[in-house]
Image (cartoon, rainbow, N blue to C red; front, side):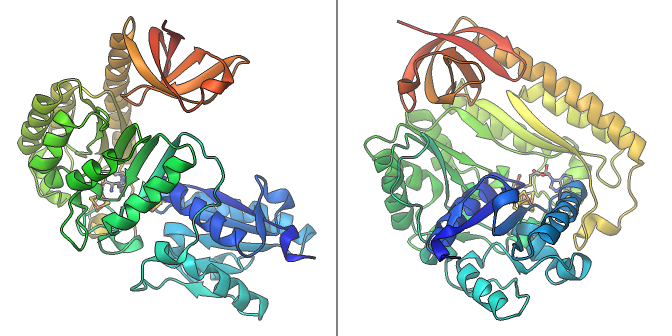
Length: 438
Ligand code: SAH
Ligand code: SF4
Ligand code: F3S
């Protein structure tokens, strides 16, 4: 088979950083003669870009590998690779447990994919989980100069030095590393040339961004805001302790910085926060939210919560509910604690499963009510909406409000990539319905 006839299917799990990495791997494999396809059924190479954050996420990989094993028995030449955070955490164990796997590659070694494929062709089953000193993005080709969707992710920082007691990320992604601002600016300019108008800067601890020349996230945002044609900037995910004055100020006066902030707090109980090694109190978080809202009164806040962390009592949980009531979230994610191998909290006596799911349901009811209230408050307003792609129904397009709400509206397809005024007419489930305003 000619090299150019080969196809790769990448299935992406987990966070936005995996989405970005999958794009870069697609580009790298394109240079090796692999065209992307959107189904495993006709792929010569299937890569699972995996997530290890909770047990359920990690286990999904093995059920997918079970399905792929049947597919591969019909198409023996097919290659199966495991990438992402499960690859980093489990390494060679993956091949021991699922012998159908041909190669394993951790998140910092994607630029070595061509060598790994060559080693596989030579009969090896390579497992690459090094943290190389070089920046993988310097060695991964960028996507071809084709037109792109209007909103894009751009990784600016990777890894985490925080070591929250429940979290695998410091182990799977390694220490915090920031990419040079000049590289990021060049990549952003390239994206804008290809039709991108909104960029979300990604990092596991994005607001800890600081490049070798001392550029912090606020300065990076201002540098990118100077790019003509780039209309919107977002960033995620932030740790409360790294939210500095310069960044808060940028939310007040940098018009391209969108009024939406994902700022996880995990718990409202100081006792639990301490056991989680979050290194701040509930009060610190509430003061921070006040300062952010003083700079940007309409800031929409999002968060992450863990319920049933080891040692969490009903009284601790009540403090989480109370913090949520005080903050008022536009939307949020909440999870039942999942013990992860190798993390400090893994060996601690846990909260009963029934208790965890009861607390999760109660928290999610409050968060759902807040989200509905936030969305209902948008009804009647006219908001600038970035039109992104066709909606579910014919003649419909979908876009995003400044607050990251999905907005559906009747509009011609050629509005994609434009920011248009939209009158919000209704709040429907997890999105808004709107009409083009004159
Ligand atoms: N760097 C980001 C994202 C971490 S993972 C941050 O600091 O927020 C995303 C979310 O998953 C976390 O915020 C946390 O709420 C949740 N999470 C992480 N580990 C978990 C675990 N062991 N059990 C349940 N939820 C977890
Ligand atoms: Fe995990 Fe905590 Fe780091 Fe976020 S800050 S990635 S939750 S260790
Ligand atoms: Fe999952 Fe790794 Fe992202 S564990 S959340 S894919 S950093």
